Length: 81
Image 1 (cartoon, rainbow, N blue to C red):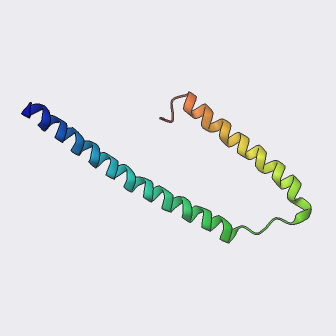
Image 2: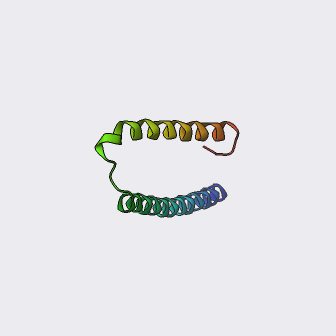
């Protein structure tokens, strides 16, 4: 039983360390994401009212293209998860 408990303790410690590493990486990614969003809003002027419908339609097309690209990449095995 002692060996089993030692192996379990080692597994729990390894798992704990992996979770801590992933949390740290997630915080870094969230910080980068926040900086990209702030940069976008600081450097992108508002869209004039008269061109908003066209801009919205083009944005939706770009969004669909991005979503399709992500889906295709996942299907091709380029993304894990």
